[in-house]
Structures are given as C-alpha cells and as structure tokens.
Image 1 (tube, helix red, strand yellow):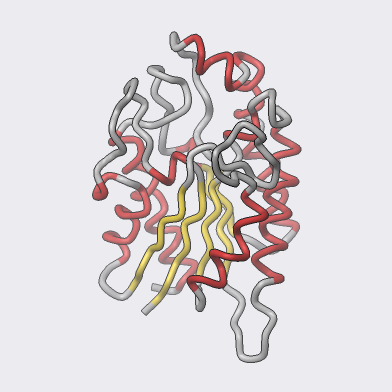
Image 2 (cartoon, rainbow, N blue to C red):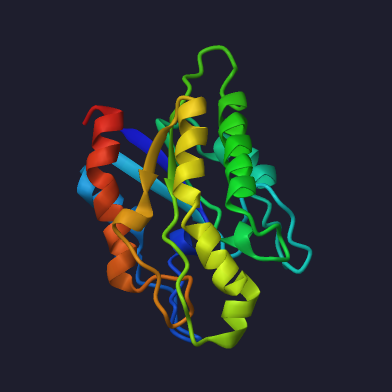
Length: 215
C-alpha cells in the first residue's frame, strides 16, 4: 500500500465558489479523484484547510493557518509516507499576508525542508515531494473577495508562481506540476474552483504520480 499526503488550502478542501455554497462532494475533490485513478493499492490523505498559507501567519484566522508550523504534526500523524503533494500559495497573495509569488516560493522551500527534516530517524524512508503551483486567480465581480485577495496585482502575481515554484522544486530535487495547465478558477469569486475544475487537478495528477511512484 502506497500512502500520499495531499497538503493544501481550500482548493484541496474542496471549497465551492458559489456564495455560501456547500463543500464539493467527496468524489469531486481532487485528492479523491487522484486516489480513484491510482487504484486500490494507493491511499491519498487529504489535508486541506481554507486560508492556509505556505509559511506565514494570519492573525485574523480562528485556527492556525501557517502551513509550515502545522505540517510536522501531520507528517508524524500519517507516517510512513511515500509521497507528499504540496499545493499552497494562493492565500500568500493576499495583501495582508505578503502578496508576492516569489515570497510564496520561499514558503514552499520551507515546506520542502520541513518534509525532509521530519524523516531522519533510523529506518525511515524519505517520501518523494511533488510541488503543485495552484491555478491562477481571475477577475471577479465579487467585490469583497477581489479586494481581499489583492485584485489585479494578485492576479498578475499568481501567473508568476509556476516559474518560481518550478525553480524551488528543481533546487531541492522535488517534482513539479502546474495546476494552471489543467484547471481555472471560477469568476464567481475569482479564487475557488467548480467541481469540474477541482476534478481536473486530480485527473491531471494521475500520470504524474504514477510516474513518481513507479505504478
């Protein structure tokens, strides 16, 4: 049995862009689609939290959204792991966090270091790491969400993320996938994905993960 940890934010949680919409059905969330596509001998553990950043604090949150701080606990909870998939960074683009794609990539670097440092005990095997750059932000008529995420400046920064993330992954020997190649945010709120696009990420990852795990 192969075990994968899918670590992310509301896009991994399955948030619905519809105003006050319910969370996407379990079968439509990308970790579920990925698990189904990989077969019976692979388990995908979804750890998605709305508002989670790569490695930065959000003082307005009701729970800890700093991805670097909580990750060691989750890694220890789910060991042993064969692969850790990290898809974070959209929330980093909020002006209240830092608003820069390059800084988000430094957060990704920190997360890679956390994973590597958590598997150092005798007999432990290092899991592979797959860095996923999230879909781009898009224009929205949802005024509050547009302002919250930084408007045009954040959209422009979101389009730079893949380049920086690819560089960080290469630097640390991690794998890379650009989710913007297969999925697009819904203009309803400019950030989240409808069910079809959420599923598309899982579908797009199937051949990538099969290759990484030798399936």
